[in-house]
Amino acid sequence: MQEYTVAIFGAGIVGAFIFNTLTLKGVKCVLIEKGEDVSLGSSKANSGIIHAGYDCERDTLKAKFNVRGNAMYPEIAKRLGERIGSTGSLVVGDKDSLPTLQELLNRGIYNGVKNLQILNREELTKLEKNLNQNIQYGLYAKDAKIISPYHFTIALVEESVLNKGELKLNYQTTSILKNNDKYIISNGSDTFKTTYIINACAEGINEIGKLLNEDEIPLTFTKGEYILLDKDELGLVSRPVFPLPTSKGKGILASITVSGNTFFGPTAIDVDHYDTSVSYSSLNLIKTNISKMIDNVNFKKTIRLYAGVRVKHGKDFLIKFDNKNENYIVLAGISSPGLSCAPAIAEYVLEYLIKNGLETKEINFKKRKPYTNVLALSDEELSKLIEKDKNYGEIVCNCEKITMGEILEVLRNTPYKLTTDGIKRRLRVTMGRCQGSFCYPKLVKIMSEFYNEPEEKIFFKDHTSLVISDIKEGGIYDTK
Image 1: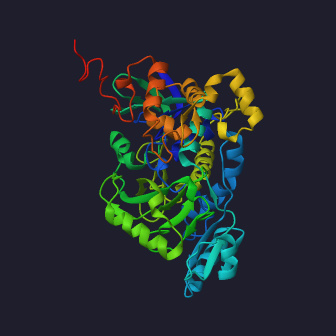
Image 2: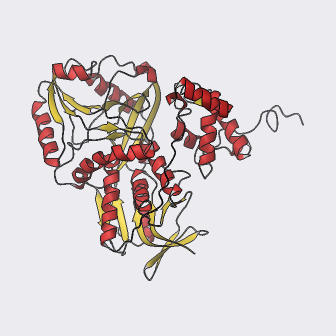
Image 3: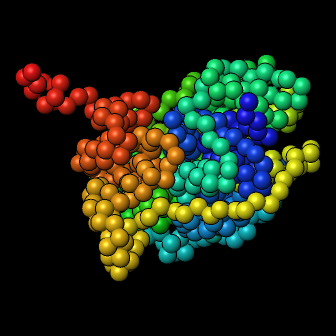
């Protein structure tokens, strides 16, 4: 029976950071995910903002980890070869907003946030030219940043696997038994041992806890809907721009992605389950609120509507060590600013484990090679690449200018079968203006040939086929 030191449940950004942090310390780890890929939950549908930390209530885990996590991200991004935008952020308000902004400033200083400044209208418009005329003051947090949360999750896992971490996908855990100082985990066909269990499953926390006879952890779910604009609207805003916060959260913001799209959201709708539907009323709410902050918005440039779900436990994170079960760690309610806090949470877990006897060691570190980004190459670099492999000269996704060479590179370097959604998260193919209308057929064909499987077996996600049958062979035009 295979044996590990640490088993981590949940391949979102928090689980990925813990997996990565432990693996690079020479700890034998396995990351367990019930889905067909990593970054399928909240980590693929949030605002992608590394917050400065002024919004967190004083003396909370959120405040502690946010400031530390923010400081850790640039070095990690450099190591992984992932993009990070040092944009800063703004919280803006009208002529009566100064007291609230001053409160946020004071809280930020208490939390240890640096480079905070309250700006007047003239100073604000030098940063953001499209602010509504009612906006008179703003809090500028210079150290806020933006990343792609799903790119980061994927990169962390890939680097971990490269350095002997193990990943188990499509793993539906059916039993966890305790045998002396070891846990025996099984899905009915694949069984292994581990000394420690870390539960970072977000909405699935209690599914794992139930198998261990742990008390149920109360969770609440808040849906956040978004509007994404075409890239030609880039420049409408240059950084995350927030309204004054409310009891519901940070509010509906305007921001940009590291890939150059402008987006608005999220809403904050309480739901009773993991619901990612988008409603007409919420879209109108986004439009109304954004129009109070930002002028010159062309909502006709919308190319995508989507939603994510924040899984909460009260007002702060819940991190519990040695619950009913020894060597069992649970991390619940890691909602906003969970993305900002993730590397610091992983560091905190590592420190606890070392204090409790976990042994680490130096490893022969292997550096992950980032995927080729044709758009980032000079003409000379691209010409040399095409000379070596002509596939890098054949565009598959016209909107995002993604080539066949880039797609094949991802397929070759991912040690498990991807869905088209998995390719999308790694390369942005189908993420552009047409949302895959033109490139899906090409993508499915490429994947079918690479995996040597019929196109009906190339899935969008969750074993959902994009192709039902061939209209010439077995379809409506089959005359046999």
